[in-house]
Length: 216
Image (cartoon, rainbow, N blue to C red):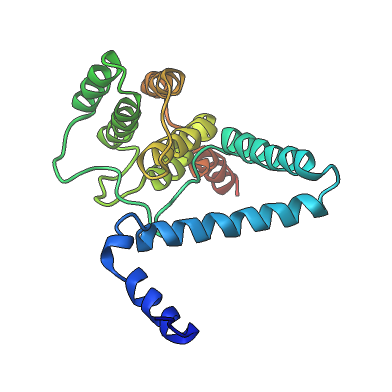
């Protein structure tokens, strides 16, 4: 018996629709992934045809872009992320300058330079508070401490600011401290211990004012 074309096509369609013929078909995810790579291939083909040198020229251009990005990352490092308002320098448990120095040295001995830098900066500020060169004020930041201390110790202003930046970088900016950066802050701590605060300008002018009053 001869079957006409349409019924034969419908019978073939029903037969091929059976599950047994589709057990090895790609999954929905595989089909989507294949479609994505097909799209990437078409984009690259279009880009290579528009780039001088074809596929080789496109590869060179991509490598150049990657090289520039790597160079920028190497030069600038991880982007700094600073909070809108820096957190306080000290935690809730008060410690003396000597305790902070001991903690810093313990971290340094283990090569934990981030923690060593943090503790040594805290030792500097606590020592200035113990010498009454800074008032004891909860919530003070490293930048604020450096700015205030610089008024009493002007010869160390730049080093105090640099130490505060180092503290902020490792605490909030995601940077990694080095052995050299810790030693710079430790040397600053030692130098501050032997530095006398600058006298206020009014103290030096008072005798002259008194002399002028007496002479008048």
